[in-house]
Image (cartoon, rainbow, N blue to C red):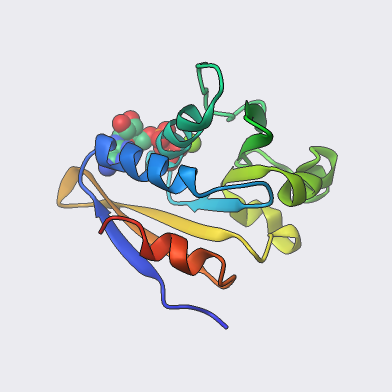
Length: 158
Ligand SMILES: Nc1ncnc2c1ncn2[C@@H]1O[C@H](COP(=O)(O)OP(=O)(O)O)[C@@H](O)[C@H]1O
Ligand SMILES: [Mg+2]
């Protein structure tokens, strides 16, 4: 079963940060967000604000461009922030420990197409598209098949 995707308009970086915090409050161990969109679309900006709103102790959230994965402690949950742009093969997904993290942690994954067959099927997919008419606007599409996401997405401010 595939549900109809939901589209939101984010008119500023602050708007995206607010949505990240709201969605972040709903996440627990085993929840995964797949973050799609071109370079500069706002995937890291979204992740940074989501993570910082859940951290026990404030800390910087750098882009995991070179480390591929950064992990954070959020209460009893771990948050894994991955950027798979530089991943050379799907075998590395196992080596990084990501497959296990999909079961046990909150995972935010940039460039998720690199996961190939290891893509978690219970994930929420977020696609950020720049708006050619406005530099500060992003069109965000949310898609999912796992029904656990339906009430969470429906509760997001439109
Ligand atoms: N509505 C918006 N949502 C998110 N980022 C935005 C928005 N408008 C402008 N930006 C800017 O776009 C850039 C997005 O960069 P980044 O999050 O690193 O992108 P990505 O990780 O997708 O490559 C940031 O400089 C951010 O301030
Ligand atoms: Mg990024």
